[in-house]
Length: 249
Image (cartoon, rainbow, N blue to C red; front, side, top):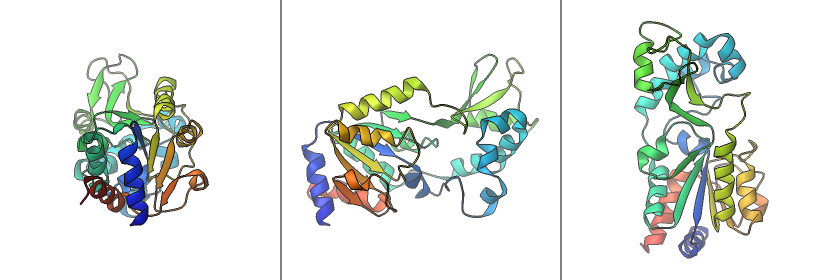
């Protein structure tokens, strides 16, 4: 409790807070990590459905995964207390941006107003030929007639608006994320193992530029040794307690 009180005090004094989130915060909403846990998630290999080379070679594998697993999962899950706590910290005027490695759109659904999605979003799709964009609901309806689904406008090839394994991150998005890290005076890393690069360099950059660094994650991370605050617990438990402390409850 003492660490949370100290962390909340530091947040209250900070003028520009950036949150950096990973798979851990979404897992608490019921979205398995890439490796999954059981059931249908084990039926599909992330090294195949999330790989750009395999998508180009056998797109039906991804589309069957999306139809059978990804779409039903996203329609079922909701933001958790960790997501909502970040929104409350934003409402207090301190949290300026959420930088996320997640592709589920739960931060926006919870109410975060400024979200940088490093790996894109699985909630939108676009045509590689004509660039027409579609929602995941629209694409799911197309899968009822044909897999892979053709673009209704030009019959071209559709793909999710995500960064597949084997693809580089969007340089403009990455630049924006690093700029936020350099501008902040407090970076709150939540639910990330901090082992995937270049994303894991973002908290490190903030610390190098003089920001305080807090890491909230169930397991230890490689950056714990440079962090000012480390809490090894679920974000859905810790973040609401930080908000309570901010409110003085």
